[in-house]
Length: 131
Image (cartoon, rainbow, N blue to C red; front, side):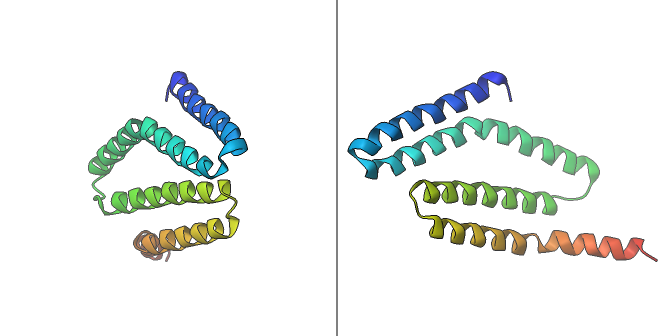
């Protein structure tokens, strides 16, 4: 990620912040929409970076011969974590910390359940290594 990319992301965030501060005075119910739109813009700005990381991981997976099963699981976990954090931030911005904590807990539980095959494979590998 280049320095200019992070400057753009910070710029979008600061512009959204200024708009939110102004809107809070006149139409506070619209501040959530600005937050969602700013978050979506930032996600789209980093999407090409994410695509290159996924390409690199796919390349490494094919070179090591481990198969794509674990890569798919890791990508699902990453996606769930990003979406969960986005939703939690929006809830906290809206003052709904109780809902935010429930979404956070739900995301963590789903991540743990999805990661079971990786944990199982690691434990089986550990059992094989230990005498």
